[in-house]
Length: 238
Image (cartoon, rainbow, N blue to C red):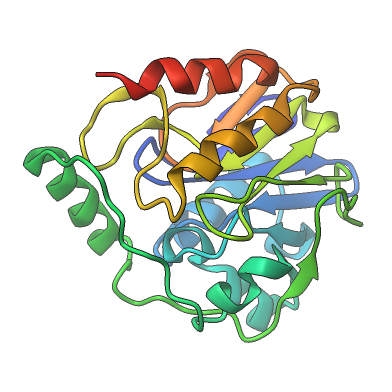
């Protein structure tokens, strides 16, 4: 799905990953679930691109619903996978996330887990090799992605700023659709290791210039990153 001239999404509001389409190639932000591999191939075809034009995958963190097809892409096509050093072990299957789920509504949670099951969520393919990155790095990938550390959801949770696409990818630093309650609107994400730290980290986005804020779960948000922390705080109350 094309969102803007250089910006595409695969998946949906339940689980999403993104493609930055630059003249020199494609940068993927996150890799969804294993079953999103077909979605990736279909989107590349619709774009007139090929899998050989994917230059790298940047993971916003190392959870299973974000690493999806990354190892397949790395192993079969030699595509490097970048992840913050503090989440590298998690992406390799070593450091298991804490299951602090928070509120839940049976119907919404069932839909999330059913979708994950359909997309191969029970067959996690952990990374065997990663490129570790740190806060502030500009990565050698199409669009020149900038790493912004946002610890809280996980130790190595990051946002990825791509000025070329006018986009800020935030992974699970926040959500616009809680997969466990079905509630929409900007709010904290479930399954967060340290909720208070995650909320505090959002203040780091105040100086980022972008027109899109793109979460791993929920609809894309058109607005200023400077307004993110306030919008999430407002969304904490039912």
